[in-house]
Length: 270
Image (cartoon, rainbow, N blue to C red; front, side):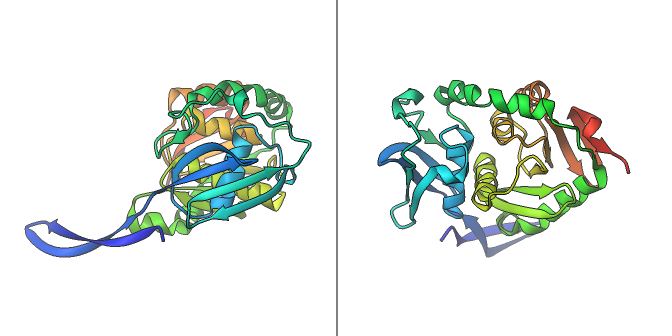
């Protein structure tokens, strides 16, 4: 259950009336790794397995889904339990966590103590993205994919209270689409589903409804996704990381227009 009706007083033009609205319900979810508490994520309690897999991949704990021996989602208690394969040398102390940085709310994507750890993990991703052959994609594919993502994000249409993210192949075929109150959570969910499906990241691109922040781009870098496009604006941290790591960053994809901020040579007009 992640939405409910609430009574409201609606004013429209010169009329006032009693009505109802649909709102989303966020819940805190705890992720445990090998029985140790890792993080508390405030999220939309939907697609929790995908969220946990995508998050642990994004921050560098796992490199693929096969490194998870077992995952159990307790939706009633709001807990996700992940057991890693024995070959993964996971030490929670490597993250230098504290009670505050263990909490990820709906506005932040990656707590500060983890960024150093993640950047060490994405050094190989930088080499992979910048050395990849530049596969070009038509702007029409980007436009149509954004429209398709919008048509599939039904909770946003119903409530206006969440973000969407999607992953498409270069032909514009939808592979994964998810929604969440946090834009970063939605990205983790689609990345998690791709990992579970064992799909190749190199021949896909990521779309989002949210701002293109540095934290969002770090997730794309980690997954070696070469193109990221959004309805919304980028900010300086996102542009800087996209430029440095060879990602084509596109914002304000609306109608038949877009702004390409970095590495525009992947996008064609044909």
